[in-house]
Amino acid sequence: MWRVNGRYLRPHRPNKIIRKHIMINLLIITHEAVGEAYRSLTHHFFPTGMPENIRILGVEPDEDQNDIINNAIAALQEFPENHGVLIMTDIFGATPCNAARRLVRAGKSAILTGLNAPMMIKATQYSPMAEDLAAFTETVREAAVKGIFAITAEPEDLVCKQHAEAV
Image (cartoon, rainbow, N blue to C red; front, side):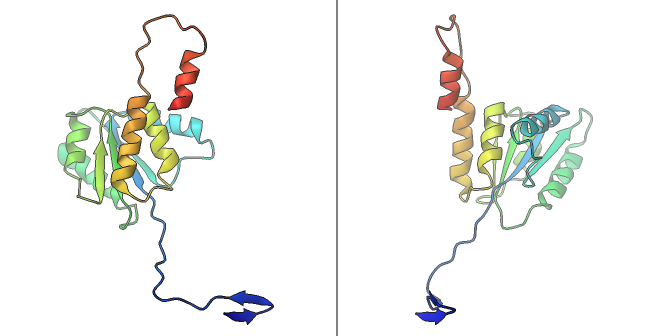
């Protein structure tokens, strides 16, 4: 150890692995203004502004598939190359999902379909801390599923609140 200004410092250890924090980026591809509604939702829960790791792309009804893909690629290029990307779409099998499917690269990007509010909130909240794309994708998927309830009877107490806290 070295002593500098009354403090002891450890010597540099070249064999020690220093991990760089990797944030997962989010690309939301939806029909028309659905993405803008999710932008508003995100602003509601995160009032300081839209996190910098999120891009939203709305697909118009008459938009060409190649134009959608080119717009998505342009959005992806705004992200640092070494970060993973979770692409979330509104409907499986629809135009936004089909375009997103052509963007997937193993280990670099993943798609979740069926975008809902719990999915968007969980993804926005945890993407800056996420390091493993596959694990993060599964966490966000689980939040989406856990946020869906069929309520067929009159609530006895604060049933919705109790369930919401579990999600």
